[in-house]
Length: 291
Image 1 (spheres, rainbow, N blue to C red):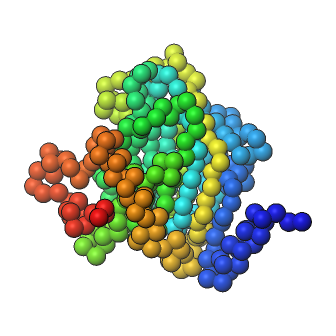
Image 2 (cartoon, one colour):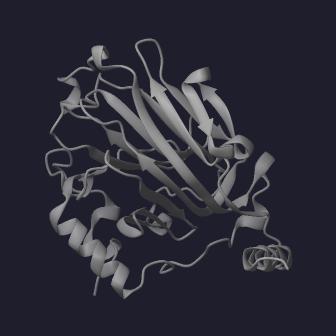
Image 3 (cartoon, rainbow, N blue to C red):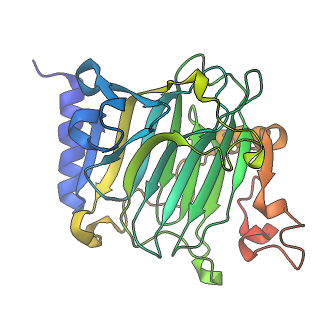
């Protein structure tokens, strides 16, 4: 007898055909869904493609990139970060297109000295414009166990989640001239590299290569996303849509708690950087409303 997961997959496949979406709904396999980006043998894929480690040594870091390009969807990855003195290291999990006016949705983990917390840094680029950093401390030790980090992207909003708790929402405000990623398919990247020119205390603390190799673990990649290879974006335009999708009352309540306790930096609150006025999207009427 076929399993329930088989019938679930068949049902989703039928829906995708009905609505014209080219979707991928898979438990992640690093062998079949990704290519080696750099680092060669420092990318170590195990467990029949279900888990992976990336290594940074004294010579090079490592990374992978998805074979497919996607326009909208939810992407989940379980990550266990480099333990101990990770200062100067950057572990990144992000979506990006290519070109001067590229789009990008970033989750970056900035390493620190032993005993000091990691910094989770998020950023969004659209039409080549970035500078939208919001940074957090985590409420757990991300080196002790695997935790799930997610990017949920649709035409109306982007949600960054940690263990299914939303920590950041960016709404589409193209109507007031704010760029938002809606037309460039992006690939999924996962990398570990030396960013000590800026990563830890603005570059003051450098990487200690006597601690190399630095190793981060990844497993259970999942994508429920619309494939848009070779710029085939028409069938993806309504995929995963809805401004409030994934933002029910409980989710907003949990996010509000995170924002009240764990935000380290928010560009929307940087009055030194924006001494002549905050960006339009930072004005109260353009932000996610919690009530």
